[in-house]
Image (cartoon, rainbow, N blue to C red):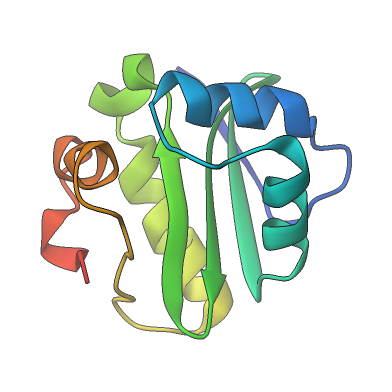
Length: 118
């Protein structure tokens, strides 16, 4: 995996991002909702495997939201890299990750970031 990070919303395919969230079984993440939420964030971080969008997270008010990584990428460390770089961009040490019970929390645990759960 060749991870590339993007810290703005320029040229993000919101439908592709919504498909990633849908496949992970995150509820209520339509392209329109995602675009509005990410554009309103203090910091955004999108992860790409080469040119393929594979992960996203946003920081608002010092907390991380909508942290999602394609399942086939979980073992390669992009979640930790994204956590660290997004935190630095936001100038927030060890921000908490806000995740709903169920699949959202399970994904964070699989990404080995459980100690950062709110």
